[in-house]
Image (tube, rainbow, N blue to C red):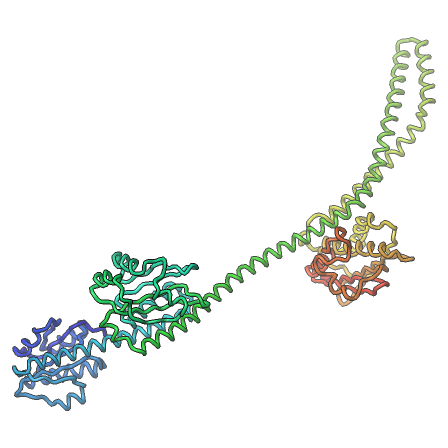
Amino acid sequence: MERQQQSVLHVGPNSDALDALLTQRNYQLEVTDNLRACKKLIRKKKPGLIIFNVEDKDSEALTEQVLEYVRIGCQDKDLIFIVAHPPARMPDALSWIENYDISSFISLSPDKTEFNLSVIERNLKAWQRLVQINAQHKAESDLLMSVAHLHRNNNDINEVMLTFMRSLANIACATTHCRIKINNQNEGALSHVWPEQPTLEQGLSGVFALPALPAYLARSLTEKKPQIDLLPNDDAFQPLNQLLGTKLSSYLIFPIVVYDKVLEMMIFFIDEQAMESVSMRQIDVVSKAAEQLTILLERKESERRLKKQCTRLKEALLELKETQNQLAHSEKMATVGQFAAGIAHEINNPLSSVLSNFGSMDNYLDSILNLQNLHDQFLNAVEGGNQHTGAKIKSQITNYRGQSDIDFIYDDIREIVAQSQMGLSRVSDIIKDLQSFTVVQNQHHCQLDIPAILTQSLSLLEGHNKHDIVVETHLAHTCQPVSNSGFVQQILTNLLKNAFQAVEQSQPESPYVAVCTKDADNRLVITVKDNGPGIPLDIQDKVFDPFFTTKAVGQGSGLGLSVSYNLSKRLGGELSLVSTPNAHTEFTLSLPIN
C-alpha cells in the first residue's frame, strides 16, 4: 500500500500526555477509538505509523483487534506499530512483539518526553526508508517489465522509453531528469524534461549549454555505458538548485546505444540526501538493464531494417516481373524487326508488280478513251447525215485500232487485273500473318491447329530462308491440345529462325530443317532439328539465359530462346535442347494436351 508522508494514526482513548507529545511535530494526525472507524482510516489514509494508547482493558482489546486486522486480515507486514501506556499499566509486551511485530513500547511519563519523541521520529524514518526501498523495488520491476514489453510486444518504442526513464528515475531517486537526443555531429537537443516546467527546461538548457555537450556528458559518447558521478563544482548549477529548492550533488547518465552508436542520453540529477538511497544493487540493476535494452533495441533496429529491405525486395520483384513482361514483348517486337527486311521484300514484289501494272493500265486507258472519242464522233456524223465525215472518221477508227493494237490491250487488261489481284492477295496474307504474331496475346486458350501455326511461321520467315532450305515436316500427332496459339507460334517461329540462321552459317552439303510432332505421355511433343554447326557443350546450359548470344554485337538480342523458354513454362510445358557439335541441334517443345 502507498503510505501518506508523515501520516500517523492515534488509536485509543484521548490522552493529554500523548496529545502533547504528538503536537510537538508537524504530523498528519488522525485520532479514533472505534474499530470500524479505525479500519476505514487504515484503508483510506494508509498511514505508515499507528500509535496505540493502552490504558485499560477496553483500549487493550481494541488494540489487539486492530493488530489482528492489520497483520492477519490485511496481511500487512510493513505497517509500524508503537504502543504507548501509562507508567502504571504495562501490557504484555513479549506476547505482542511475538504475535504482532510491535516496533516499540513507550511509557507516557513526563520525564521521558524527549526519549519518546526520538522513538517516534526513528520509527517514522524507518517507515520512510521502507517506503523508499519498496518504491525502488517497484521501479526495478517496472524497469525490467518495460524491457520485457519491448521484447514481447510491438509497442511504440518512444512510449516504452518514457516508461523506462520514469522507472530509472525512481530507482535513482532523481530530483529531475531529461533526455538529450544526439545527432550525427555528436550535438545534443534537450527533450522530455521532468518535472514539466518551462523555467526548469530553461534552467537545464543553461546548465548543458547545448548543442555542444559538456565534458561530463561527452564522456558517455566514448564509454557507451551508464555512469554515476559527482557533479562538477560549477556555478552553472546554482540557478538550478534555487529553482528546485534543493542541492544537487550527483548525476546518472544512461546512454541509449544501438550498434555501438549513442542515439540519446537519459540524464538524472540526484540531491545529497537521496544519494544515500542509491546502492550498488541499484547500479547493478541499471547496468544489466542497459545491456538488455541495447540488445533489444538492436534487434528492433534489425527488424526495422529487415522489413524495409523486404519492402524494397517486394517492390523490386514487382518491377522485375513488369520488366520481364516488357522484355518478352520487346523480344517479340525485335523479332518482328528482324523479319521486317524479308517481309518488306515479300510485300515489295507484288506491290511493284501492281504499281507497274497501273502504269500500263494508265496507257491502255488513254488508248481506250481516244478510241471511244472517235466512236462518239462517228455516231454524231451518222446521226447528222454527214456521210463524207462519217466515212472519214470510220477510216480513222480502223487505222487507230491497228496502230494501238486495241485487241491486245483488251486481253492484257484482263491479265493485269488477275495479276494485281494475286499480288494484293499475297500482301493481305502477309499482313494477316504478321498481325497474328505482333498483337500482344491474351490468355485465351483454344485447340491448337499445328499445321496452320507452322504454315504461318514459315510464311513469316520466308525472308530469313535466303537459301531456300527445305523444311521437312512429319506431323504424326493425333491429339488436339488446348493452349495459347499465339505463344506456341512465337516459340515455333523463334526456333525455326534460329535453325535457318544456323544452317546458313555452316552451309552443309545437304541443308535441312525438320519439324516433327508426336504424342507422348499425354503430351504433344514438337521438335525442330537442323544440321547446322551445333552448340558447344560448354555453353549448352546457358542458351536459355537472358541476353546470352553467340552472335556478333548488334546481330542478336539474346532474348529469343529465353523468352521461348519462359513462354513454355507459362503454358505448363518444357523446352529442352539436345545438340552434337558439328552435327545437329534439336529443340524439343513438350506441351500438356489440356
